[in-house]
Image (tube, rainbow, N blue to C red; front, side, top):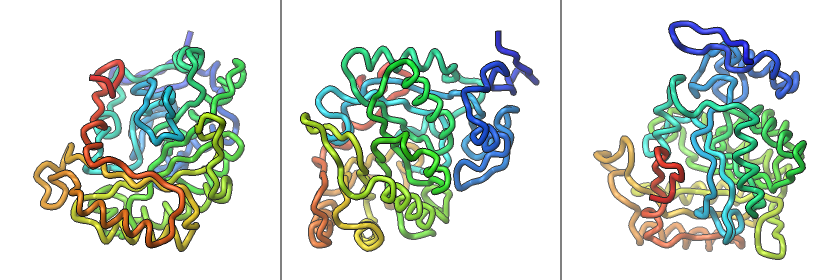
Length: 331
């Protein structure tokens, strides 16, 4: 039985004492004075304190499901087992997952324990899925490591995918070396004022490029595929083109080419949908236009990117999850 303390109805000791072994010493220290992500809130997440991400040291998972909507080398025909974490260290005003990333509370149905979570993942892997994606994991890296170790100890060796906003501490990413097979990072902005206005993170541009460089150092520019075209190792950078911000997108591509390489694998996304707080925004209150997207695609070609994917213009209709459903993307 877990040993829990409580106050005012809220559980404030998220991890049963007898199960603290699931985190190594370094991870426990980081959670006791949380410096996992660039926010470095310094809260003790074992005592139920939650910083910017609003999550403690437990396993807060909104959904474990087969997802077929990622890039072809990531999900393939069969799909990927995606683990959607609750909470986030950004506050993107256009976030399509806002009901789990920003509307979270310690009183929610998402808290689980490691063994239950492993069982849910393993059932999907046993059905023929060979990869596990960790979605929005920057604030829960110890939990990600514990899940991977748990799967490995049970005889499962899936391809692991770290699906991140890139608002990651490079030092924290180093602790994932050897555990993550494929990095799937976003690169959202290069302008600090835009990052502050849209995601409450004025330091996003410099933080993200350091994170991307660490991922690039670990994996290089090649995306290694198996005989079925599924990624086994490497890095694939995503960029979502925002309506009214074509020059920002072009500058993002220029920075990737200059700071990393035009040989990296790139996914240029057109799927923006005016959700959450932007329905009345002067620039973000509409889908991306075909002309806007084609301008950025042309810039990608002009800059010499050799490996990448583009989306159909109607793709925004396919990425509107509802996390109240057992499968958020099928409704």
